[in-house]
Amino acid sequence: MRKSPERRALRIFAFDPMISRAGDHRVTVEVPYRKLERTERSFWDDRLEVVDHDATANLYYRAVHLDDAAIAMQQGIEPSESDPQFHQQMVYAVASRVLENFDRALGRRLRFWGGERLRLMPHAFQGRNAYFDDDLNAVLFGYFSADEDDPGPNLPGQLIFTCLSHDIVAHEVAHAALSRLHRRYNEPTSAQVPALHEAFADIVALFQRLTFPEVVRAAIRENAQQPAGSEGTATGHRRAVRLRRRQGPGAAQHRGHARSLEVRLDHRGARARLDSSCPRCTTGSSTRTSGARATSFASRAAAAASCRTGSCIRTS
Image (cartoon, rainbow, N blue to C red; front, side):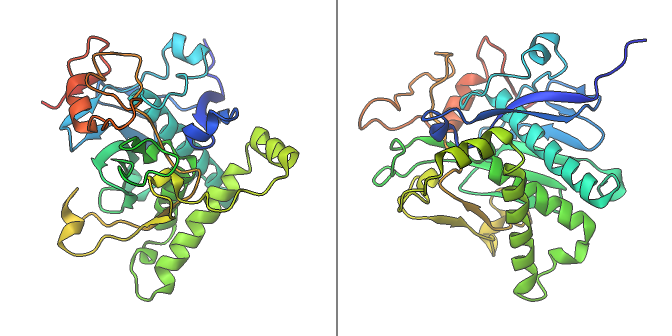
């Protein structure tokens, strides 16, 4: 009888994709090997489920098949800013690592209420945010365009995916894990309660970054301070940006009573360009041309829905 491996190797971005062009910040992480089940719209193990539904474009991206021999032999899909299936791989790998670290710290396996799986939605909505929704037991990642007039080092209109930031994924999954450990921490009985949530999630993301030997060695070797004024560049502005708790009627824009916990995008947050190798999926995209506006993700996604590469499928 064939024995299943104990670990699954997957490639991710340790830092923001644009920063990785200036140095090799792609890393391979090993996560616990769990049996995966898959449909065209999602894949899941016993604790996590990746559902790549884009509510703005009204489509599902075809789920990556991580057990496919050709993909497994290459340690997952090659990191790419424009490949939605890599985005799925990224959130699954980082979330698996976070939960494994919780298991190790607790001395037991962390499970969610009622045996539910934590859902990860890499392209849930178009917006400058990412958050854990306790009612859905899901982490929803947004995407948005860099500022046209003041993009910082980004291209004007350049598309930014929050799901490609290791820190954001780890931060939000930590919110989910803390909510599982103590449900009352979701109730802001005082300003200190959400502050605890944010501090805890920030620390988890920071410590998980330090588990990458390649990153730590490079940081020690370089031994240099980050240049002043670099924060906030990943958000398409020169200034630092905080994505805050949504309140009032606007909070229902993406999903009913969805509640957003604050997440900070630092200079290594998520950025991406519309530079797919598939011409049909990026028809009309001219992000590399000076002064040109990037094609909206919704338009690009609609074009991708009929792409012969089969990476995306329409909502029925």
